[in-house]
Image 1 (cartoon, rainbow, N blue to C red):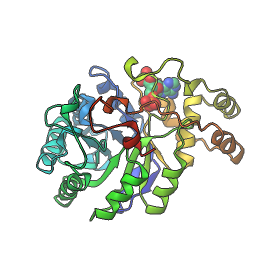
Image 2 (tube, protein in one colour):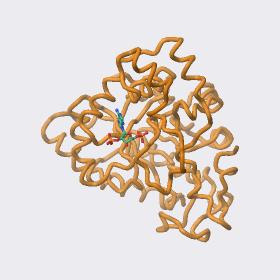
Image 3 (cartoon, helix red, strand yellow):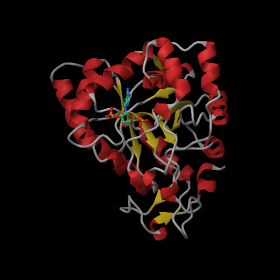
Image 4 (cartoon, rainbow, N blue to C red):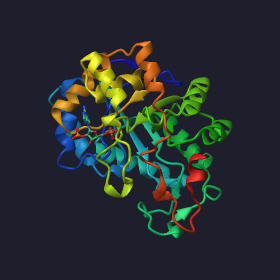
Length: 317
Ligand code: A2P
C-alpha cells in the first residue's frame, strides 16, 4: 500500500475506506471486507454515528490476527460541539472508546464551525458559536496537547480554506499535517492544492466519487452526477476501468490521498484495484477541464438564519 510521508514524519496510506454514510448494520462487514482485501486506512468521525461498529469490526480483525493495530491507519474527527479546549480530550476519549483503540493515527478538527456543547445537530442559530468567541487557535492548542500525550500520532483539520489554514499556521506550534476536504474533478481546488503543497500540508479528498448516497436534503435538483460524466467514462473505457476507478486514480496522481466510501464488497475491491491505474498526461489534461467549482457538501446546513456562519465566511469565497 502506497504511503505519503506527512510533515511529522509519519507515513499515511494514500488510499483508505470512507465510512461517512455507512449505516450501522453495514459498516461492520464493510470494514472487515476492506481490511481483508488489503485496505490499511479507515476514515472515521464521531458524527458518523457508526464508530462503535467500526471498533467492533477492528477488534475482531485484531483477535483473528488479520492485522495488528500498528499496521492500520485510523483517522477520526473532533465534532463541532467539542471545540471548547476543555472538551477536546473528552471528544477524543469518546471516539477511542467507540473504536476500542488506545490511540488514533490522525485526529482532525472536523469543521471550522463551533456549536454549543451537546447541540451536535443545530437547528437554531443560538446553538452556534462565533469563531471570534471560540477561536480555532484555542481548539488547536488542545489538539496539540493530545498529540503531545500520544493519544493521536498526528493532528490536522478538515474543510479549511487557504485563509483559515494560513491563520492557523501563524499561531500553531504544530503545523497541521492534513487538511481533509471535498475534492474531485468538479471541485479541483487548485489554489488550495498549491497552497498545501507549499506549506507541506497534505490534502485528503473526501466525496471523491461525488457522494451520491448523501441524504436528499443535501442534494440539489438536477445536480451534475460525477459518476455519469462522459469524459470520465471515455477515459475509463480507454483503461478498461470504471469511472469510479478513474476518479480514484486521478486523486492519487495529484498526490492527494483518497477515501472512497463503499459498503459493497465488489466495489470495495474495485476501488482498491484503482490504486494500480496510472493516468497519462492526456487523461490528466482532459480531467483538468472538468473543474466547475461544484460542491456536493456545500455547508448550507451551517448557514442558519441569524447565525454567525454564512457560505461566504465558511469557505472564504
Ligand atoms: P456503495 O456504498 O453502495 O458502494 P463518496 O465516496 O464520494 O462519498 O461516494 C460514495 C458513493 O459511491 C456511495 O453511494 C457508494 O455506494 C458509491 N460507490 C462506491 N464505490 C463505487 C464504485 N466503484 N462504483 C460506483 N459507485 C461506487
